[in-house]
Amino acid sequence: MSQAVLKLKKVIVDFSGFKAINQLDFTVQSKSVHFVIGPNGAGKTTLLDVVCGKTKATTGEIKLQEKKELSKLTEDQIVHQGISRKFQAPTIFHNLTVKDNLEIAMKQKKNLFSMIKAKWTNEQKKKVNDMLDLVGLKEEQDQLAGSLAHGQKQWMEIAMVLMQEPDIVLLDEPIAGMSKKERNKTGELITKIAKDHAVLIVEHDMDFVKEYADIVSVMHEGQLLYEGSMEEVQNDPTVREVYLGR
Ligand code: ADP
Image (tube, rainbow, N blue to C red; front, side, top):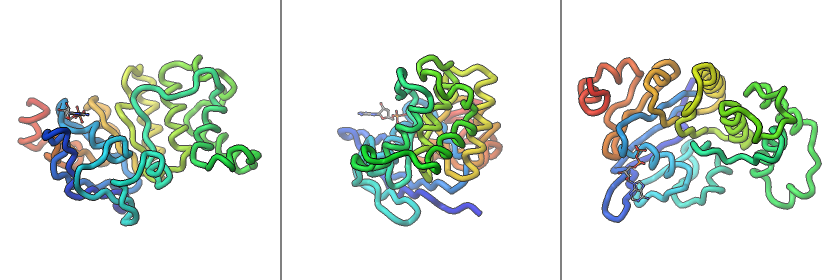
């Protein structure tokens, strides 16, 4: 059964008097594919920024699994608490192999001392292998990351995010620039990931959202305009007027 893993209460992000996020209450359930949609400037990116610590909330509370208040933590501390984000622009090491990139992502979660001292345990090697399997990059594991196709780079980055053992995975337009085949594979991958994680995704492609969403949140002017299944969202008159334009 799913449960709330992340709760935002009355969060405001104020940029010099402009509230990009305005008194937002927002909940993410475990094991769900949760899309955030809305017009440009609605505050979708700022929501991801404030959850991963890139931007600080001006006021309000951000709590992970009823535990820790996240709004005062640094980005690194938030990764340790269980929230990892894949940005839209690639953040990979092009001159290292796919496998090395995954190993580095795993090490980022450890402290410097254990990074230097540690020998790879069989368990860690298995984890890298399982992850390569999951994202379909086993055959490419010894290839330089820079030589991968666009879609493969994105999947490698998703694998790097998962190596950090997050409870919540944040994705920013994960299918941007992908072919139809790559897009379908990404959808299937997200569905698999949501068996064990909450996946919170900012996305503009409504067909993709329709196909893969468990929950859709529609944002408008820094607030939640509507939340429900994609079918409910599409049938809501206010959403149609403000966003879908139909
Ligand atoms: P979306 O992702 O939904 O398009 P954003 O979260 O990027 O929207 O932006 C929401 C609003 O906040 C926009 O009007 C944007 O111009 C503004 N904004 C975002 N970041 C900043 C910033 N660092 N300083 C000032 N205004 C910002």
